Amino acid sequence: MIAVDTSSFVAFLAAHPGDDVDLVTTLLHGDEIVFPPVVLSEIVSAPNLEARVEGMIVKIPLLEITSGYWDRAGRLRARMISVGWNVSLADTLIAQCCLDHGVTLVTRDKGFKPFERHAGLRLR
Image (cartoon, rainbow, N blue to C red):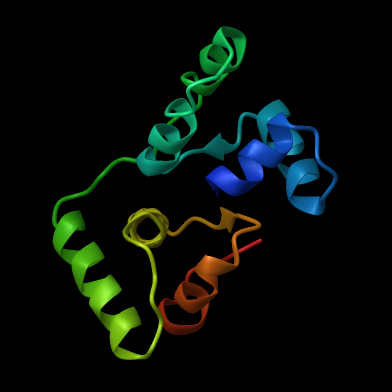
């Protein structure tokens, strides 16, 4: 399983070029795609989301929130801030979910780089 971030999934929906979009296509065809729950929330919050797209999105499995997740996410964000990175709460929640499950995150969002450098998040 490989998790996909909002940035790469939105690029996929818009048919933008990119290695991440190619990978999302491959993951969808192989049933290997998962979403951190925050990604689902971000995508379905688009006010102009088409019903057919929403129907496809809600079928994608979600990574489960595990016991202690909220505490770990808070501590992860504190650690990122303490080393000089102003990371968003949403990115922290996505990163922590991927770290908890040991899955790689497909993203085009550079905001995840600090999690790769300082927390071991695997990015593609």
